Length: 130
Image 1 (tube, helix red, strand yellow):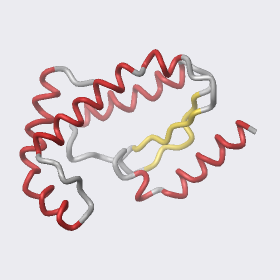
Image 2: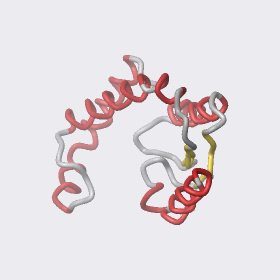
Image 3: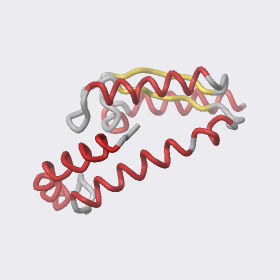
Image 4: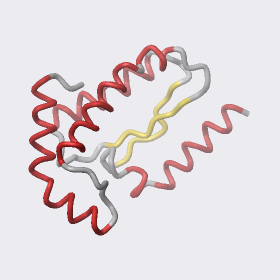
């Protein structure tokens, strides 16, 4: 998803948020990484996710997605649209993948704000495997 402009934007965003990240890290809900480390981690994860494409194609067990529809302060709406469109591509290319639900939370908040949805999705996959 990240081209060079996207990588530069991620680095700028983390530099801008560095002060609040340090405070949140002291309180617990944020990683203890520098803004540069955080940006490079996000960029590396984006690269790794892109490289997993062939592995996901070979998936032989059921998998389901929970899609967040909420806004994200660290990404432009176009970036979020691209990320969400990737889910549609992933489900279209392999019948074992599906979208379980779309939530009003953004992708960072799903576990914290929609734990019931996550638990229900896990239960559905377990039922499919049985």
